[in-house]
Amino acid sequence: MDISQDFQAPFFAMSRLLSFPWTFVEKDLESNKSSELISDILKQTCLHSLCRKFPPSAKYRKLFLSQLIKRQEAAGCDPLDELYDALAEVVGAEDTSECYKSYLLPGGDSVSLRESVALISDGTTGLVTWEAALFLTEWALEHRQAFSGRTVLELGSGVGLTGITICRSCSPKRFVFSDCHPRVLQTLENNVRLNAVTQREPPPVTVQELDWSTATEEQVALIEADTVIAADVVYDPEVAESLVKLLNTILSCSNPDIYICSTVRNPETYGGFKMQLEKAGISHRVMTGAVSHVFPYSRGSAIEMIQLYR
Image (cartoon, one colour):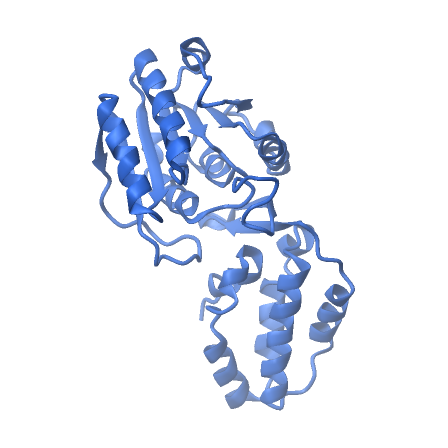
């Protein structure tokens, strides 16, 4: 049984703990009375080389290992020293405001990011990876031709998952990450270096500060973007207004392909964004069709991806 995707949980996010295949684990332990499965789980998660190099939060690892021990003891299996050793290693670890999250890509590659453990920190939501960014990344992996040989500008890059994945997997000619929050920009630059994107040729990669409300046509024109992308950037009416202003500036300079992916948390805010697009003379079409599930995340929220044009 291929359990690698199920065991991506400790690398990925706290929310995955509840969706881990505990029932399968319990049934295997009950029927075999062996700790072999627990050992396999450990090797694919907490003892995996990726997890050792880029450790998830100590809190998550404690909870995960505690759940494994609980299931093992309930089944009456012999104690597994490496399981208790792994727990002992993290019991004394301090909780920090940041941790690593690693995202497994098709073909065995991975992207490891330094992210905040809090959804909002330093007055921004840009220090964590949100669902729309995961969806856009999955879409990019299935539509590599939208980026291959092209200069790509990403607006609101955040911690960098989508852009780093595109640089790794989609062969762009050049990639420009952008954001405006100082802490986000520093984290983004660190993550780009962490994943050695700047050392890979091609593409040339830059990280730029780009303030949507003050960006000039000259600044935008210098980028010469063929494709523009953004994810989870429509969450506040004022931010949406600045975004439309920037998009209008971009379309005044050239005619790139523009893709915006949004989690529709507030229909009124999202509808207002579309109305502002219309007032600015920017048309859109909704991108339909499912994408392959690469990452384990909740898909209960409404996610919409649109292409803009004039």
